[in-house]
Length: 252
Image (cartoon, rainbow, N blue to C red; front, side, top):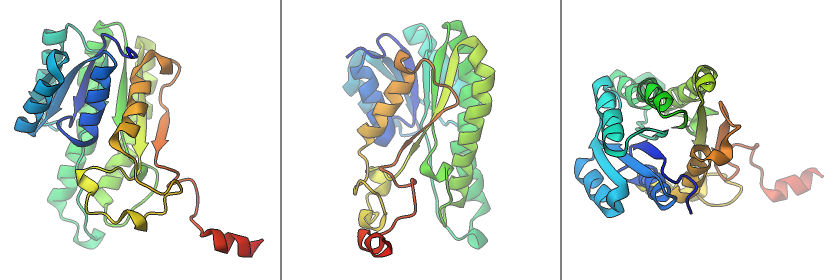
């Protein structure tokens, strides 16, 4: 308990799924949390459930003025901003020859431009607070390709890269910036997936709370010497070429 006690943290896409898991754990560990989302009713209800340590602000992360409003709400309600979790994200799938341009642009606007705007707007507030930590949620698709997910892959590689360039600039002012790369997570977005078709060495998808533990670590002072780093939470999905044990035995 108390690993982020009295820290003020903004979580985008926090009304449900992974974002809600992050917000719930952060409040349990002592933080004041600003939940933002475009899911207005779900966001308000979730903030009310968390109690006085949380507020909800409606926010489209692709809109610069809505970032200014969200940061202002954090400082007005809780007095400062110490942490940011750039969690909001969307995905769409199509072969690259038929990938709709509007879906490409929308995905990059939310997943990549939203992260850029978040860091750009939050950094001055964190400097006013004396430092802080930004956690950018990328993906295993920011480490390798995935057929059909072209805009998502491009955006998540972009998040991985801008995390490092921004970390170089922010370090001198006491702000750390790191990325997390989740694999297959058991959320509403993946509820129709056939989990057995994914070669995950640990044999199952992650629960959202398992990613939240990494978020908590990066926002806490326990990670005080980490910046520009990547934490991969994927059950081993990206560590090697999958082979059945029988095939490996035959080789040797």
